[in-house]
Length: 325
Image (tube, rainbow, N blue to C red; front, side):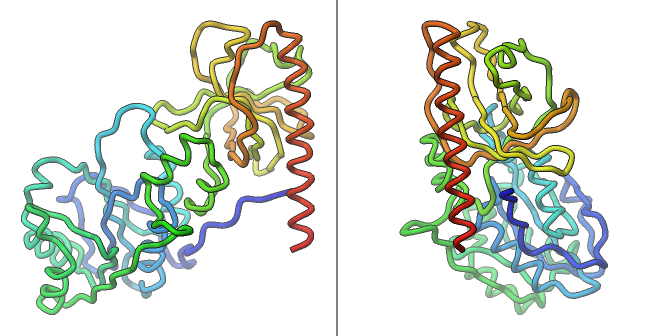
C-alpha cells in the first residue's frame, strides 16, 4: 500500500499541545520564542522550509511561534481549510499558532511597532525566520534591512531563507492554484510536499453507484476548499487509520441529476463495511478524465469500468516503480 509521507520537522517529545490564538493582544511568551510570519496559504514546501527552520533552531525552554496573517476569502478559494492548517502545524510541532486577520489596522501598524511591541516584548523573540522577499507593516517598511537593523537593538538573530524552487520556478501558492485548476495533480503534490486532499464526513447518497457496480463513500467538500477540475481521479483514501487505493468522481453527476450539488464519490478497493458518519480523507494522485454527461446510465457504467481498469493499471505501475526503487 502506498502511504502518505510523514511531514518533516515534527516537534520533540517535551512539547505541549499547540496553542491557537486570534488576537495579537493575547500573545505572550515570557520564556522566549522562535518566530516566522506569513500568509502560509497551503503550507507548501517553501512555507514548511521556514517553519522547519524555526522548529530545528528552537531549543528546549523556548516556543516555536507561527503568526499566520489571514486574508478574507470567498468560498472555494482556500488550498487548506483553517482546521486543516491547524492540524498540519500541530503535527509539525508548532507550539503557538497566532491566526491574525490581515485588517486595515494591522496593515497600518508601523513595522517598528510590530517588531518592538509584539516580537520583542510580547514574544521575547530570540530568532526570526523569513523569505528573501518578506515585507510587512505600514508602507511595507518591514523588510529585511529593517529587521537587520533592529536585530541588534532587540537581541534576536535573523535568518533569511532563499525562495524554494520547484523546477525552473519558485514554489508559490499562486503557481499551485494554477496547476490545480489544470488538474496537474503530480505537479501540485510535488510543490505542496504532500498530496492534495479533501476531508469530510461520509453521507448518504442515491445509492446509484452500487447499482453501477461501484459502491461509493460520498463526501460533501468543505465550502472554502479550492477544488480541482470536476472528473475522475485515482486516489488514496484514509479512514480509521487504514489507507485504500480507489477511484473518485468529483462533480455534480450530470448524467443522473440536475441539482448541481458538488459531491465527492469515492470507491475504495478492498473495503467492505459501513462508513456513514465517519471521516474520510481522500488524496488526489492522478486526473483521469473530465466529468461529462452520458446519454444513458448504461453508457456511464461502461465508462466507469474503463476508468476502473485504467486506475487499476495506474496503481500497478506505481507499485512496480516503488519496488524498483
